[in-house]
Length: 482
Image (cartoon, rainbow, N blue to C red; front, top):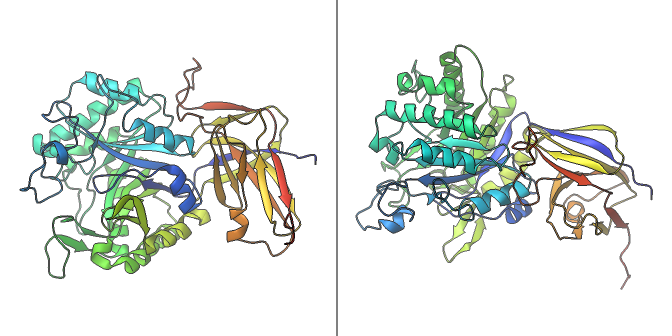
């Protein structure tokens, strides 16, 4: 069959979806597993780490290095109880979080790195961190998030003004040494609908103006006393708002950010969003998140650039899965997972695909990130629902790293893999009649990092030559009618 192919561009969704993968409440889950559960990649995967290299016990995790029976709150350790960032000054780029960052990018997603960091570190530390990130494409870096709170170590060590000044200092270092990285300022925003100002607004105004992206973390319900107590009615370690109230507060925060920035707009995200099953129960948790996402879709102003679902697998009830207490390598699917899966497959939350002119081979594919990539699409005519649908990669294609999409379902081909079975698409959504479908291919960097080719755009764009199209095997009948 003479197979045609066309160029295709992937651009941003109306509202992007990002996913938290690991935090103080759970470990990292590999991207192959997540893709199989959710059938699509995210714009970005949020990884949460801390950097307190001047502290006793570093680089051990705080709850291990400073284990104590007297701890009764998640943030009662000398430094924040995230997994520790092993890069930075004299760091090791083979250790966390770098293998996970490579895994994220190989699977067609951007890295969203949250880093709580001691504001007393020198510029040498900040420069080293920035240089660590130069090969990872369009990284989003969330520095000292929830910075108007009182629980993180950086707030206990410094005044709010010092925290804000540190943010601006780190932002400037990033712009100089890692221009591929965008910074996210995450503060409390408007927390009361009657408030006319944000909390600590005066201290953070310069940071609001300097940052690339604005953010608030908003949990509709939250058991913040976890895991040291149980949320019971009348208790003091949890709260409960409505989806509508939470949405209004986030939007009021965006309006205030714009005001502080002289009326000029910037991208706005919600870097942590969920309802806590400890408070509502897991079934209600799922319906609350659907209600919130309906508010996003129905708002014609479309002020929100994206949100991060916190998180994929959680030791408590803030995840799409709950960690099996008998085996931390196993996740127990929660009702929220299927609801969330439906949400993220809505066109509103999916990247926009634009088909271009017919292409000739060899063709160069460009990966600029999950919101800016150029691939190819192959139109395929199906007479009916197939029994076999396989994509074969001959020797010339064997070592390529590819993300593929057909009928809204995504597949990953790792380097060295020679065949991908596409049939799950047609088990889950079988065809009732003949149909034209398209197989879309993109090529994220094969080892998750951009190569320094000396070109002006190497920190952002990665290029891959596709010499030929893969071979397609489609059959409409079983091999044998046994």
